[in-house]
Image (cartoon, rainbow, N blue to C red):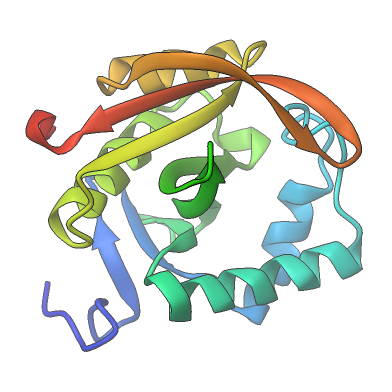
Length: 185
């Protein structure tokens, strides 16, 4: 795939996996994001759904992450149908006063149990190592999110610690997983 100065190909896609293509989220993705971010089944780990204003803010935040880090949540598009499957990406965050990048994802409910999360996490982890030259990638997962724990462990992430994450006025118990560059997929 020919890359531009913004680290994506001429069609706007930054990376591909077997069944998915990834591109930056735009304001045109509002309806797809709303379907996902307002679905309580999808948002169970966040313990709330998003309002329209929060979705607009979410898009703006992703646009700023792309400029700042060349990373963020990306639209995950099914190659064969062009369907918006969900959002997957690399997100810079703070952990114990260190700046780290975590791999993260949300899929529309109808795309669960097809292996897209596993495929996307593999592709994004390799992107982090190869394109962004990160030495280590993390995953922060709520302790009751068994499917995401299974994905992280299947890709070779190792559990490092349990911690409390304060989000949206709540204390939520999380696991921190990591994977280092020497273990490329």
